[in-house]
Amino acid sequence: MLSQAVCSPILCQRVLTTQSSRGVYNSDCQTPDQHSLTTTRTMKLLSLLCLSSIFTLGLAFRIHGKKHSAEVDVRSQHPNLTGLPDRCNDEGFDAITLDHQGIIYYLRGDYVWAGYRSPATFLNQTWPELPGHIDAAFRIHHPSNPQLHNNTFFFKDGKVWQFHGQTLKGQFLMGERFPGIPVGLDAAVECPAGECPQDSVLFFKEGSVYMLDLLTNIVKEKHWPALGRCTAAMRWLEKYYCFQGVRFTHFNPISGSVPTGYPKEARNYFMRCAGFGHHHGSNSSFHATYQKCSNSSFDGFSVDAIGRMYAFRGNWYYRLDTKQDGWHPWRINSSWPSLHSKINGVFTWDKKIYFIQGSQLFVYRTEAQYVLIEGYPKPVQDELGINGSQVDATFMCQQSSILYVVMGNRVGTVDLVQTPRVLSDGFLIRHPHVDAAMCTNDRIFLFVGTKYYLYTSVEQLATSKHLPEEHNIAIELMGCSH
Image 1 (cartoon, rainbow, N blue to C red):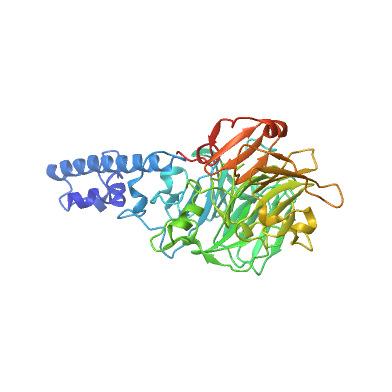
Image 2: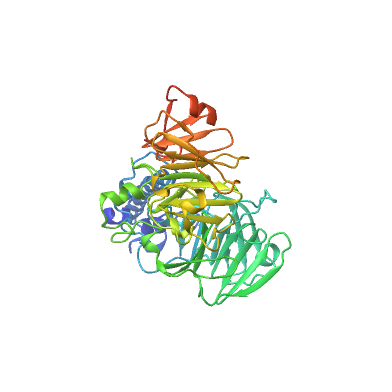
């Protein structure tokens, strides 16, 4: 009985609950002879063992919760501990939110799960002042107000708790901080300016959505029947998700529109669950493409007109300029409609992003969401004067209309302001083959296999007699440990 009690975190919590200043233990953990000396000693021993158990579990949780930790977590293959609830069952979550470090938290009842695979912990271990069964939560985006920016807000009934990390910053009534928002919320999610007209928060209750403008405190009520009722909501890497139990829907935060193919199974995407995963049962070739730290080469790198940086591999891409919310592969067509599979080249010019894919050229306007320009794709030969299937990589530098086209060890040029566009002979480089290329403010990147090389100018690239120092793509650009 003693060993079984120690193994139960719930029973440990009961044992450590006192009934009075005399230190009498809660009756749930007492024997009928609760006044006997033997029982008292037994309960003290049990409490010490429970404290030891809780300390051990707590230490494990803290180690696991550290972002980018190099520690090996033995629970990665067993994400549910005996006696604690399982995030992978069919119950769904009360709320989902991120903290200031980009860690995703899944809340249900008195428990919370951190990240992709960790087991449950008590909610008040992470945020001691919070009650259980939270209605909604979100991480606010409000750069003009540093006291609020990147803080996490939790809602229950008519009360609000504000945290920065695990530190309580304030407790309010909803009407004081969020006027015009009804109590008893289903979900909430932030919406920064550029994705919404102004820095805003979307609050969900039953079939209604309340958009609060953080600058004016004006609330607009919307009805999005295509979305349905959200039991939790989350913004991650500029994408918006409405959760309905264990299923989720991607939606537009302005119109509420939903792409085809939704809802989808959340356990395939947002957590590690046995028997689930969109790579479950797939082959090693898929894993090499999907995993950012594999030794597979990349097909393209690019920075768009508003500073978003991407890496492309096969049918997937990674967003590289924002590390706060972690790195995750996304299908190319989830951001660039109609674009599928491997690309030959990518570049940015005139506030647009261009993709060469075989013989076709795709052109998208660079906005909060990319929009395919009407009439595209078009033949690369007609648009750029080149054979797209022979292209290994492309790049353009800022304040220039010259497109550099890498084919084998030759770099040709096309002046995009000229008509018709014609490919020049260009110059030779010391690399026999290049997988991808990119030009930033002061450097040119050439990517070859798992390495990349830096040049300070096109002139250096054209005249260099020796290869510069090689750099590791996985470690230096993808945040990998090796």
